[in-house]
Image 1 (cartoon, one colour):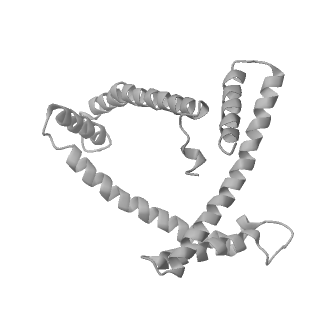
Image 2: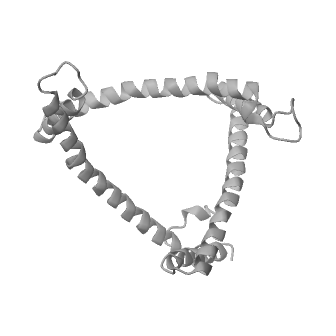
Image 3: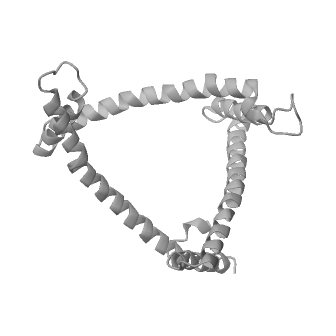
Amino acid sequence: MKRQLPLSLVFIFGVFMIIQYFVPHESSEWIFEFLLDWIYIIGIFALALGIWSLIRVSWDKIKYRKDNWQYSLVTLLGLFAMIVFGFDYLRNFQTAEGLQNFMFVHFFDYIMIPIQATMFSLLAFFIASAAYRAFRARSILASLLLIAALIVMLRFNPYFGPISPYLEKTASWLLNVPNLAAKRAIVIGVGLGIVATALKVILGIERAYLGKD
């Protein structure tokens, strides 16, 4: 019963959501929107569960002094600080006006945004390193990749005056024809994978979400 109930609910609601998509009736649309409203409710509980999991894992690292436990301490301090500033107790206890709170805004603008900028700046070096390894002309495909990448990058260079129109047309063709064709193939493959995974979950073949118990 512990497993049969979740499997039955997943099957019933999964099949219903598939069938109602092909039923253009007001009742079907109303039920569909009503069920979608539950996504927000489930999302709130999932957020609470995620916060509790973060607190428990971080506290475990701090308590037993595991590797890099200092980062967990900073994480918890930042979490509780943003929660306190978000509710803005100092101005009005009855309303949540955290988006206008001085400390809330400054924590986000002068700590969170610089951290994100630093992460993306470091990511640029990894991309450059990966591009260097991928663009080495060791085969025909690697050579084609190198030529296409050079054409796309050189189109933005202002020093190629006479040939700039040709570079721009060639780069546009590369982006809109072979690149778009490959992108659509990837999207179709991902879509088929999503459908296959959904069917496995609905039919009870995939049961990883039930846990190990």
